[in-house]
Image 1 (spheres, rainbow, N blue to C red):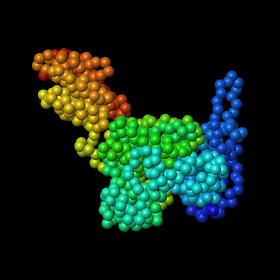
Image 2: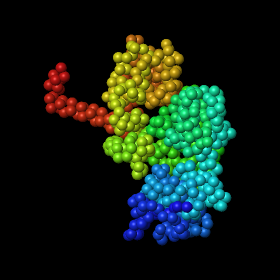
Image 3: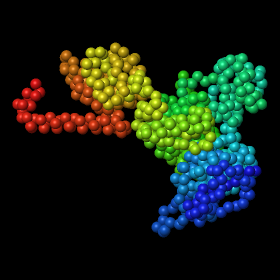
Length: 634
């Protein structure tokens, strides 16, 4: 057993710990003596088991809160010390969240300079796969959790029987460690999955290919993550080389039917000690060489798909044991099925964005869950967010240089936060950090990501429209083009097309029903004559609809105006003056500006320019007099 302690220096101590110096100089750890150790200072209580807080109304002065075990009063959120197996970037971000809440975290990791070592309260250098090390480490903690699932689960089972509090439970980690066992568990729980089967000989994998067809996904049962342990056989002839690339059948393999998905989704689910759950918004993950590259929040899918994905994720987590944050990775298929890919029993790459974009980050939520504290609000406080993984683009110093260039650009972009994990070694495709961009809309954050990556996003075809401008026929175009002109002045992408309520009712129905899923936020509908288009569209979509009455030769547009304003209760349609589509464009801009500060500034400037123009005109009139003023108008 090789392990030793690294403690963060106490503010009260003038001399830094020699262990901390060794951690940064790369000195070889010495064998731990595992002697009991007192608290770092008089104000820091020794580790205690998980406690419960009780409150009672009284006219008498409140008694100090205790941990329920006869320990010292609770000062702050919790006296419980959290032990984390693993000190990577997830452990680092857990430590940041715990520090904000005044909760102590001790980590166990074999690397002296692991990412979490600089921010934890104490670092024990040792293997989380060594039984003696894990057992002794557990004595220092009130609750034990993981930031990596590839730990010594047999030891965790023994510790649980001895009364050690492990969250999530060892049984859950055992299921998730082995991906084939994970698949069998979720299949028994009737969670939708791609077809799968175990293979242990060349003949059995050939039979799997005959059954599932090609391409065939071949996976290792254990130690498969970040693109490792997965390979694709395009045909039967490739099977031997694919098996060899994964370490042979003795490594433990299984296969999955190839899933022709259209999107990869993820849901972060938090489960408390009382088994209550909360789910974060569904996100879309974009992978590069089987490694998560970009996360878009929220996912650009229909509400129906969001509900289905959340339901599948929540059902999967409720089938497991223990508290904490779990990530559920999902496939969305062409026929709108949601299939479970795999589960992680810990905070996850797809939840990094929650630090900046949600009211409660996944890291704070994990701490709340394992301590039995009330779960926090998982909803987004920013309308949109994108997380971009900083992956090693080259080896060594060349890779560090490229990463620094990317970070330097990120620091100039509004709404951007940089997280650098401080890993000492740069390798290609290694996760070295991440960048989160939050903003008022998906278009805004995608544009900022394009700027970060120096991609050209000026092509209008590449920009999703936010406003739909529709009309019944081409005769309405001379009026409706003014709405498009105004929106372009505000840099609001829009789509202008013909949709007739009477001549193309099926097209109108499909257009209105799909508008929200396509990313539209406002619809402007021109209406002449019978003027049914705005009202019919408003009855089919939850989006705000602005009707523009078009002047006709018979009733000069009054029939259109009255048709729009007399919509029945429950079907609201906004309107503007007859033939003034420009105001419809301005109203759409104001609607979008309500949650877009940048656009709001442009709308305010537009109003200021109008005011200045009127004041300038008034000043000229007063200076020149009416007759001279009118001559100037000629």
